[in-house]
Image (cartoon, rainbow, N blue to C red):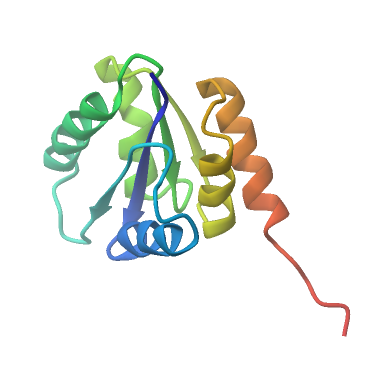
Length: 130
């Protein structure tokens, strides 16, 4: 068993990140899916759809939700899944380094993987010293 990864994003972000991850790692070591929330969507309908995806991803070790923006609708939907009985951890600020770090530590349990995700996201930020 392993942790499932669910990207909760605004339109076109999640699939683009999965595609970029496939470019770096042709065979992803974890199951990764994206739910992209369109601007005009009904949050209740999206919550139901997202809960279905999350339950399919959970093979017994839980689901790591990686959301693009804390406080936005995709993140709020992801966070609400625990109230529906989905065993999850949610990390916001999704970027490609975060996703790649998670995929490189696929053997970690859910709680540790959430920490790995946050560390990877922060560590992937660089400011030049020009």
